[in-house]
Length: 404
Image (tube, rainbow, N blue to C red; front, side, top):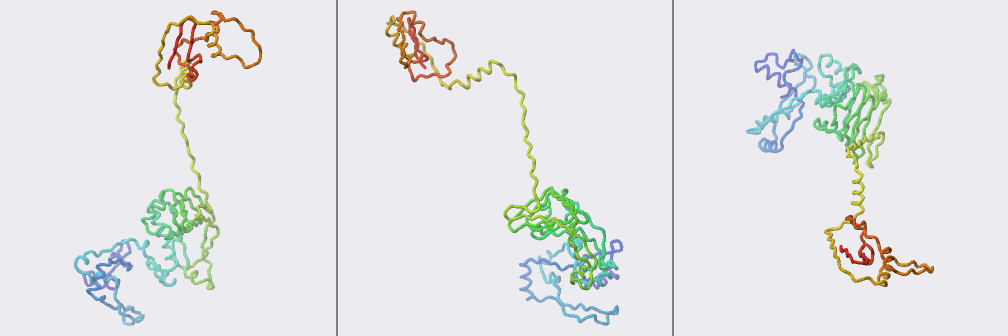
């Protein structure tokens, strides 16, 4: 409902004082209207078809005197968009509602001259000037950040051209970084690690996540288009930005209506670039701790070492069958024994002449290879040469054949 209609309605409904401020809070008990409306298109279209777009009209004259006999300026015929619910019908009319939130989070107009703002503020009303509008914008962001757990301080009250405001810290979070309060938690995932002092200034734009920040000064964070980044363990301490209230009539208008100029004494700038490089910030490499497990071992036995060596050296043999056949042999002939010995131990290829010793039964036994009768398996068993001692062993009185 328009403010000029609320007061007459209350007076005609049994409230003789009309729209009077609550003595405890100092504010009207009825929420204000900032004319930010959301319409669903289907019922809106249906209402247009039924009404042909015709809305109730009214006049809202502005008077120059308390007796309301002199117009302050010419009046006009108006229709209010907030009257749209009055033309709805049926179930659509039942679905009309509103959401009320603190004014410092959603409404701080810049519409008044500085002189008018001074008078309004003296009467306990928001001044609605450039200095208050800018300060309230910074204050809204601080309030949202504190609501999720960030440690953001407030600067003491300051006065600019007669307007008293909380000037900082100045925090500007651009739409490329965050749009609405629901996105703040994703951009500040560890809010308890965010600390911003009262004198600080912070500007953030782009696809950045700030995990931990200790700011006491001025910091500007940027991301090139297509780039992204994560900030952690960032500590910034510098002289920052200062407000200079020494302005004159020769200064630009936006400086004069605000009441100060900003002197950017010292600024830290971090830029995440599209090629993956970062300007002004070197991410810390996290220490990787490797834990080694210590296992107590049993004392090594001497026999176990020997067994392990045999296991490493012994070839893998599956299903070894050893058959020993004892065959009665005929008496050995001297020539045959000599031939066998020569095959097992071939003579040297040198041209030296050696004295031939007659072969007797004793010499045959002395030259016969020694047979290993233990149960251990040979380390390397070469069966490709049938005349090797490992494959065939002949003795003078009997023949023993080992087949693997």
